[in-house]
Image (tube, rainbow over all chains, first blue to last red):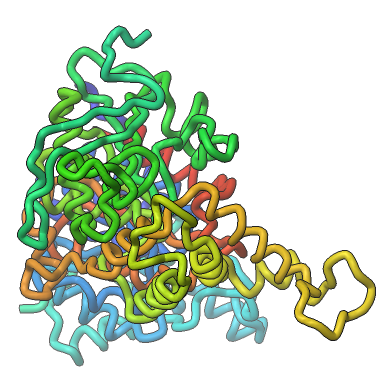
Length: 201
Length: 371
């Protein structure tokens, strides 16, 4: 049987590529289920999702996925400890009320957690804020300050700092610029987007 | 074309049972009134059971014999609808305790040749489901592709997945709960007291004479309020007066909402038996899926292989979203497969019976995506 081809968002492609086969996966903020469907079909994952937007839930259910309408800030506490191999939070961290508690929950629920987010210290953002004096609107942060869902902007160095502070273990990290993977050197300025793989201990 | 005489519209069958009841009693024989739509496929893998609500019946998609009204779930069931007789073999069964042909307090006790009345045993949601299972055995249907229900129908669907997990591939639970709340028990008690306060109720022995229609009508009026929402009532009626320009300074139905409720009450008594109302509300009040599992709902779903789809409506205050979420959390905690969505609608609990394109879309997607 031919496996269906999936054109995934670059950060999701990195996550999909690095998940072991036959894993139990919880995708928090799964959108229309693109990553879950790819994981199910290509990695034989047992994937579950949480999504806040009912239209997205409906789209994901139509793909045959199990998705629950819910909120990363309030509903993760209902999931039992160690019930998944991976918990994924892609481009959702910056929209949560308490990103630190959300990651604690991811690491409680999953053995590993993938966290991806747009880097607020990318040079374009710095230019916009530093020289333009305006809240940045870029490709990955497309909304204006007043209607953005991003309430906790974070930089790669900020994230590294909290990983150290909380003594989470960083298993791996990937950086993206213009949808292409880019080097670790100078990532906090040069990367538009970061993907971290964490574990608890 | 169904050649099988067991299948089709307006079917009745007497089954020997016996049906073991939660109360400890045994009940036999069991009268089952049901309808089927569509054709059972050769490997019997396309059976879909529709479970009806408190005052519903087996006429989900055909004309009601008493009221002459269209089937109560034509919005979901029918050609081109998510549950489609061209694709599914659809079964809808009048619950025991009811009054549209299945065994209930108004049916005749063969041992006395008189209606059971209050001698009918107190039944539970689980008993209703076990009776349905006995009928499905008779119909030669082992596995259900899906069991679907709203409100009390959702309770039955849940009970199916817990009592007969191996027989249910998927379950859709709409505007329902895994237990009846204190507030809902309270509303039911108001309805029951209203029936029993009607002198014509005569301790349930009224089948030779005048039924307690006043009591039943008031019970229905009170219940009907709980099926709607304040927003819906305000939109539909507001404070508008009924067929008059001035208040009457009396106790006529001055307001449109009063007139509407009175109509709801009066028309209900033509199609429903007061004793059935007592028995079925009791069954709902006794419902708590966690009862047999040490109060831990998640344990009811342990090892479940059923796919679940849970749907709630934001304006439903009778079976609010929090009750649906409770089901979802329990299934998740048990490692089960569950999808959940809360839909927007101004129409309260009744939303699941009304045209709801978003509900149809998700049910259609869920059913068609079955592996």
